[in-house]
Amino acid sequence: MALIAGKGALPTHLARALATQDAPFLIAQVEGAEMENPDALPVETFALERLALLFERLHDRGVDRVVMAGAITRPRLDPERIDPRTAALLPRILPMLGQGDDAALRAVVALIEEEGFAVVGADAIAPDLLPPPGVPTRAQPSPADKNDAARAANIVATLGAADLGQGAVVAQGLGLAVETLPGTDAMLAWVAAVAGACRPDPGGAKGVVYKAPKPGQDRRVDLPTIGPATVEAAARAGLAGIAVEAGGVLVLEPQETVVRADARGLFLWVRSP
Image 1 (cartoon, one colour):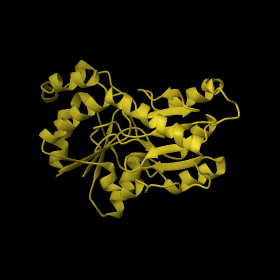
Image 2 (cartoon, one colour; image 1 turned 60 degrees about the vertical axis):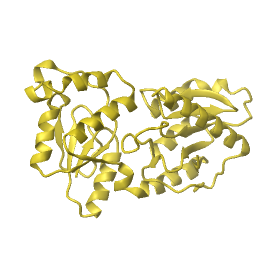
Image 3 (cartoon, rainbow, N blue to C red; image 1 turned 135 degrees about the horizontal axis):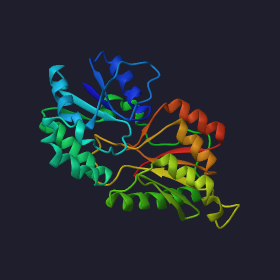
Image 4 (cartoon, rainbow, N blue to C red; image 1 turned 90 degrees about the vertical axis):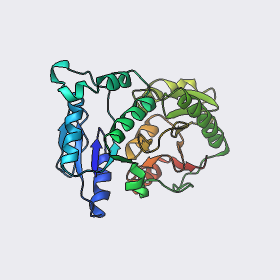
C-alpha cells in the first residue's frame, strides 16, 4: 500500500490504522503539502513535476494499492524540474489544475489506475472514522437547528453539482457562508469575524455548519473530514453545532471531538441523508 499524503492529520490516522493491520505500506508526501507527522513516520517526498518517477518508485517497491489522504493546494509547475516521462503526462496534468476539485481528483485517480494501481478509500482503511447515525454529544439539535441543517444540506448539494465546496453554514434559515477552495476553517473563520450580525434574531437559533460529499463524488478520494479543530472553529463562530452526512464524512479523533463538543456546549449530529 502507498499512502499519498497531503496536509492535515488524516494521513497519520490512516498510517496508524495500517500499522495495526500489519499491512506493509509506505508514505509518499506531496512536496509543499507536508502532512502532520507527530509519530515521526518515515516519509518520502515527491514533486508533481516528477510524478512519473513516483509511479516507477511505487512499482519498484511492489505497491499495488494506493490511498490518497490530506489536502493539497494546486501547485505551480516548474518547467525546469519536469522529467521526460512526466512531460508526456502534461497534456493530462495541466487541465487538472484548472478544474474543480472533484473533476481534478477524478483525473488523478484515472492516471493512477492506468498505471496499474488500485485506488482505495480512506474509509476502507479506517472504517471507525465513519461514525454511525445519531447524536453522540450531550447537546441535542433543536427543531430550529434541524431545519437549518436541512437547509444547509440543500445548499451543499447545489454547490456540489457545480463542483465547489462540501460545507455550508446556515442560521435561522439563512445561508451565512459556503465552503470554497480555502476550505472549512476559512469558512468558519469568516463566520466568526463577519456573519454574527447577519442573524436577524439575536436570541434565535445560532446556526449549524453542515458537511457532506458532493453528489456523485468518487468517495475513494476527498471525503469531507472534521475533528476537534472543527469543533473549536464552530464554537468561535458562535454556532450551535455541527451536522455531517452519515456515511460520508470522516471524524478524526472521534472521542476527543465529542469531548470538545461537550465542553463547548455544541452538538454533533451524524445525520442520515
